[in-house]
Length: 603
Figure 1: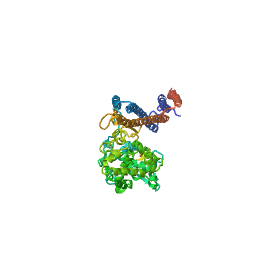
Figure 2: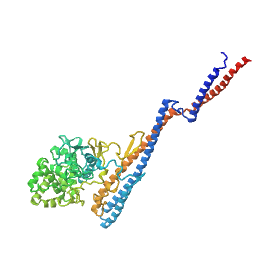
Figure 3: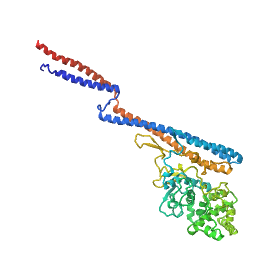
Figure 4: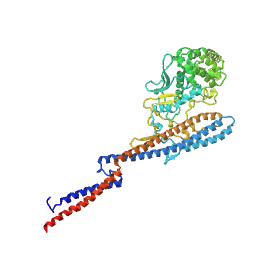
């Protein structure tokens, strides 16, 4: 190798190596000092991009978890207020039961009423509980107000939240029959909103497809609502007031579901032709008696026994005689209840119980009357004879022999005051609804269980987004990861502690106290339902928080694999690069001295 002085290539090469070793040492220092093997995109472009996206996800998950915990705190605040309301309602029922017994005078009941008034005021105070300035239980968190629902949705809301269950309760109270007992064929109820049938005055119907032996096909009944006859439903009417009819929809549903219960339990007897139930019981009597029918023309077939026998006792329930079979059937059932020498409602229940146990029609009449009528024929002959005795005075016959007073507000329902219960059942009150329509909701799925029946809803009428509420909690890293919550209006009026005239629940008489007990039973159900919904919300949020914590942990572990430095390995690299740097520095000093060797040639 020639000796040169202008370009010391050994020094140049050693300098480059020194610079490389210095750069490697700087990277090692950065990794060791930060604990990360990727400190910038320069270190690993793809790894850096993946890691940064994971870091965004981790922070999003952690914030979502914080949101879920805050939501849980808000819901627990509401839970405390609802729990307090439930305690109050339990106490109120105790007071109502106390007021209903005759060991108390009306003066005592006035004293108890003062307590009730304070309890009701406290329920209103509970509903105003707040979280971060937001009132939780005044109904403002519900998703819509009544004006935003369509007419069809309002009908489905009424059916889902009140009318079907209330109708089944009334049938059970009246007859001791429902859809849960042995021998019941109906397992489901399909709701149909019929928009094709022209308006006819018929608001609804309930029936099913039966085989020749009376077996209900697929165990399914169909409840058809005739929209053209109904017109529009009053959005704020608990009773289902319609523009197309003077009738209330809740009474119609009770009437039709009575048919449903009778078909479900007795269709095999009805269709067999052997000891079949007469039409005036199935079509008219039971369906009309459940809600009362003294607003019908009850005198048309009472002119004499022959017309009544032909139009009622011998009628098939179809064609021209059908109307008389309904009105006449109601009269006949009230006649039976009035003349069996026992409590009116007990008579009817004994009659139904005998049929339900498989007894013949004759045995049912004998059981209802305590043997006064041994057969159906005995009963019918006795009634026909009384009709003749009251010839020309149908009003007197109805009142004296049937207990039907068409001049008062009671509808003649077997659960009403005309039947001896002391509770006047008007057209509005005979089906007992409690609460506010603002708390009525669309079904949460395409079918729901009500009163022992799987109710199958029309397409597009269910809400499947959980609580379906108006408060949205963001509990996930994506834009649509929300949990919607809606609390019912828990004010005293909304849950049923005020009547429609705005008066507080009253227990100042024995009759009012007994009515209050039934009201408070339904109020308890409303409050407990809200409490259960809150519990379900909290349970879901607990799972959500746990899932978010696990997800954040897993993503953080994955990000650590990509980005975190192996400190043992990096210390080894640091030591190596440090030694190499020092060696290069030493060699550069040696290389710089190589050029000075040329001076020996110049001496």
